Amino acid sequence: MVANNFLSDGGDNFAAFTNGTNKIVGGIDIDGFAAYLSSHSPYTPVATDRITTAP
Image 1 (cartoon, rainbow, N blue to C red):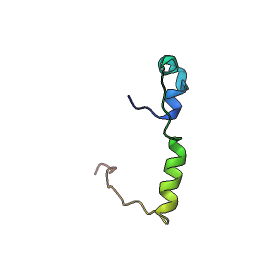
Image 2: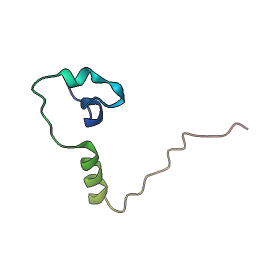
Image 3: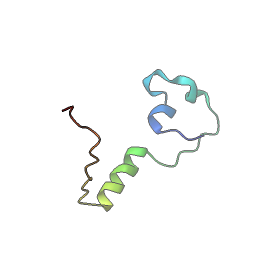
């Protein structure tokens, strides 16, 4: 099973994962995200045009 560190540590009162055993941590997800942004700097997201206004 895979979960982000926030939920696996019981965030949002989601305590089910805190009862797990043999937890393997591959790193903190926010650190991975920060590393990605640093290695792709400057990051320029493309417009998705998903939000429109009604005519």
